[in-house]
Image (cartoon, rainbow, N blue to C red; front, side, top):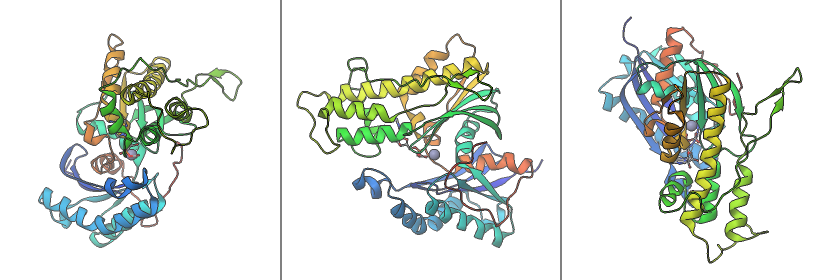
Amino acid sequence: MRNFICLGIETSCDETAASIVKNGRSILSNIVLSQVDLHKAYGGIVPEIACRAHIETILPVIDQCLRRAKLRLNQLDAIAISYTPGLIGALLVGLSAAKALSFILDKPLIGINHIEAHLYAVYLNYRKVNYPAIGLVASGGHTSIYLVKSPMKYQRLGATIDDAAGEAFDKVAQILGLGYPGGPAIEKKARQGNPVRIRFPRSYLPARLDRSGRSDYSYDFSFSGIKTAVLYYTKGQNASKRSPLKKDISIPDVAAGFQEAVIDTLVEKIMLAASHKRVKSIIIGGGVTCNQRLRTKLRHRIKNTGLKLYLPRRHLCTDNAAMIAGLAYEKWKAKRFDSLLLDAQPTLRVS
Ligand code: KG4
Ligand code: ZN
């Protein structure tokens, strides 16, 4: 089969990203322009600012991506675009650029589900994945667990019923005055703390009843309670986010205790799903899966289980376009292309 050179574009949230990937595996260039400095002052992403910034940066980012790969536009075989889920205005900027390129170059447009792409990122550093697998996507906007049967075939087992794991990291960092994004800031602070000195609650949601009335394990998550627990612990009952921290608080211990609680919940649910669904491996993706403590704990937990753990490189866990151009290869092989009528979908359609 001849080579497939794909340009991927990703603008679903606060990164403007473009990447060129050959045959779904080898990254020829990978440009990620983070808007983090624009959003820092607000302690979170401001959608309107994100959209405007994407408009300004999308063309220079694509340009730089082509230059790095030493390729011209007419050498591309397809344009892949992350079209769901995400901030509607942000998605539309990338989608419009992708449609324009597809139309002008007369090359196929391939719409990619951002969450599926996070689960694909492992292929950018592993040759083969043993299926079936349990997949965890944990980021600032999503925390879901999947039964993955192939790169394009998966079933959602559960998801957060309130905050995403990354959102909890971001909100707790704000309470502790550690800045934005919260995940890396908390991870850094937690290294100086003791993870068992303060035990924050782990919320393991109870079993659900399925349609036939049988009880099924819950693979759902809930992270909003722990954020309130941290708020009350550090600032007192009835405190607001802006209240001052109590004087005798050890921020490293709070960061370490909080991180431990979130990670324990993620790891326990992954292991529960892996054993009930009798899978061969575990795949993770999304910004939170950069977390070294999570990676170490998972490595430790799978010892002697026979499970294989696939960890994408950290820069491929956070939002990037290499995972978009990579997954497009699978769609291209299956001849699953999209028309110029492809629309941005801010919320995920659960498959
Ligand atoms: O996947 P991503 O780049 O964007 C979204 O799709 O949301 O994930 C960003 C999220 C943020 O909430 C950030 O705080 C979190 O991932 N994050 C981390 C770490 N690095 C990023 N959370 C925990 N530990 C980290 N090292
Ligand atoms: Zn993401």
